[in-house]
Image 1 (tube, rainbow, N blue to C red):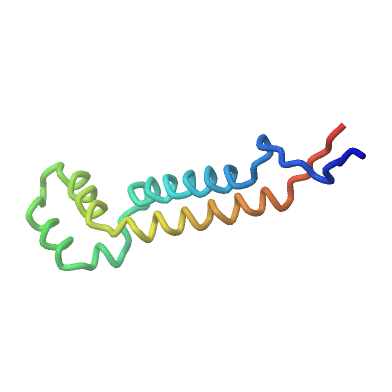
Image 2 (cartoon, rainbow, N blue to C red):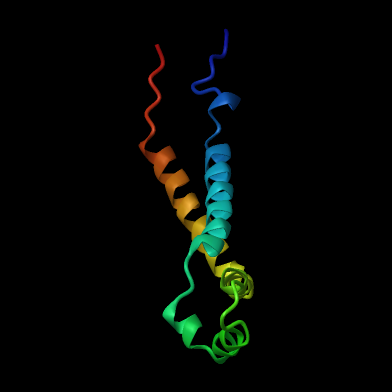
Length: 102
């Protein structure tokens, strides 16, 4: 009497690796968005920003000062939002994926 398995585990079709890759990609994208997102009105209304702009008035350092403002932004929220979006896309991709074996 031979035993035939009903279902075999195929290591090539791992769904977890897709979710991990999508989550990592989302987190990296979120960190990049931190630097690409322009300085907001709330950040421009901050006393730190106004003092800094008064110090560099008339100089071509405005770009560097805006980078400093972006540097003090908390990166955690951007990374977490990107990771959550990547995780959701990875799970959705695995849920909607159809494997057709011939």
